[in-house]
Length: 117
Length: 118
View 1 (tube, rainbow over the protein chains, first blue to last red):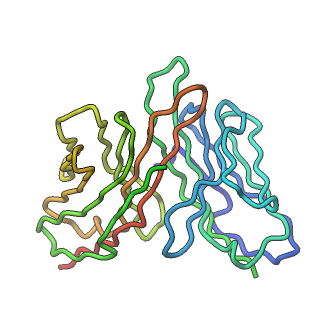
View 2: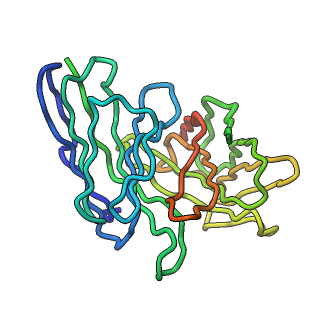
């Protein structure tokens, strides 16, 4: 599945660094999502964007800052992270409503494995 | 709020055999969707199968089929003729259809790790 791409695939950063994760979807979808996947925990929804507008912030700490310049691109800006933020960060997209077929199914990217030292 | 429970943390099946993964959920909604995703060691989350709650017929996709029991709020996944490539983490997920300009939101279970052996 190459419909949703994420870069970088792996990232190691110190607690004082600033980095960004990038997600791009090539499916013509209007909604994009950030999830956090930690060991032995269910996937946690972080942010939802629909037609570039943020519709969900699931009580995520401000050290995570999302940006959605258009319906195809989604970024997650990281600064002053903590070691407990180490996880797999997954991006997804879906086609919800609009004028196209109403699919509602989320398609995921390969994830970015983040390690905070 | 919706909850999804997968009570089998790990399962093992021999190649060519059939295995069933369990999933139960709790919701007060009448219209919703249910999904099974697989996450192999590559960590890519891949859609396996999808079921609409208003459909009584169980969804099938090649070797994968579901047993959807709406009244019991049960949604199990059956994998027939298991293959080594089926080794993965399997997640059950619930989704209430979006509306009012909001996008869909998935609620995931904790997953079942399936190992297919020779």
